[in-house]
Length: 314
Image 1: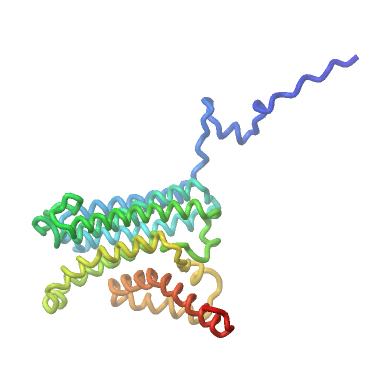
Image 2: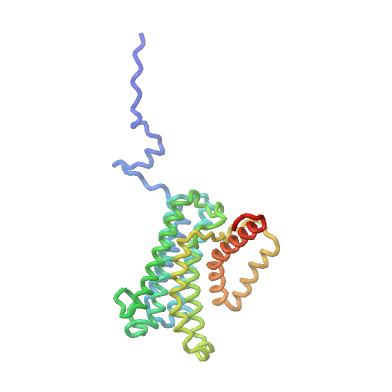
């Protein structure tokens, strides 16, 4: 006579090896393994944003790096962070180590480099011309400023930072796959595009303000262009949280086989940047920021033309 079989083990005790591995002895989940190289590039992006804020707090004068002004150096660090942001994605795809943790870390770094840093640079530029003393030692504009324009500029910077955070949070929630090759367009202006637009405009302002020809022929050029920078910052912030579609430049023009005309359109801006780097950089980012609204207007006009040709009501 055989003995009865023992009762089955309760389900809660039969955890799989992966589930046991992800749990600590106290019952808390362990953090999944992190890919080292992509994470280091993402942290490099974060450090570049922090360094850009650091140099933007300094007086607006020539720095010890290529004799650039402090705002020019801050803008260059924003673009260096943009390079790190592109490298970390390429490394993650190359090593096949894309993960949700890396995507969240990338968004946190982007908030600092493309959100806080450009807004702070804009505040520092306007502070040079507006404030209690309107000098390099004047404090950064804030809600306690003594005029309405200065308080409005601080509000624009705050709105821009909030829009950058909302843009990145919306992207993480709406996007199931974080691989760039799966995206043909972006919903709203990407935060690197917005930060690059603001930073390139400030770099161009510093370059032209330091040019003797511009300073002698147009003495009020640097002041009025600096006071118009908050409007550009506000438009970029609103574009980030809009529903306007923007083309993914890498997927559209750099991936796969392209015809000769596409190669020419890529080479010409690079050639122009050799002689007119500051102007080409600002024009390229401004054109990308405007490409979304212009593309949307063209689509609306085409739909109306098709509707009129087909006899349908407009």
